Length: 200
Image (cartoon, rainbow, N blue to C red; front, side, top):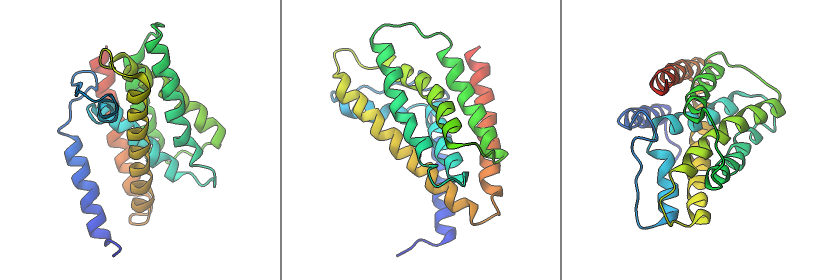
């Protein structure tokens, strides 16, 4: 049975309220289990900054009119793996915390103003953000965990969050002439400003 608009809106509101109980930074609350795959899967959900950015990418991609807009969120997990590899290789990457916070601000503003970009430009932008997010994931991989399993876990979680964002964006656009995603984008951008101040 197809859920009603009110049920869908309720689900989105419930998800938003649940997210507000999460830590402000992904790096303040890192869950470690005995399973590398599970650790990797849980990590994107343990930080409000990571979670907001990944949801925002899905929402923003849903606002695009291009038939290939799905390539924008698809590029994120690929480059996130590259960022994670840099961390595991011990390569220094300055400004990671600021980059993650900035990604939340920028993505929130893109949603709020319903900015349309060519698919290639969108992919390039989110790829830069993805490296910073992936680097943070890689830095916090539990000691002696399998990099393959841990990386697979956070890639699967990221794709899931992108899909949730995409679906929420598409659904919300049908209700309020695109105003609901814009309001959400403004809120995401404000949260990103908070992350930037906290990272300074």
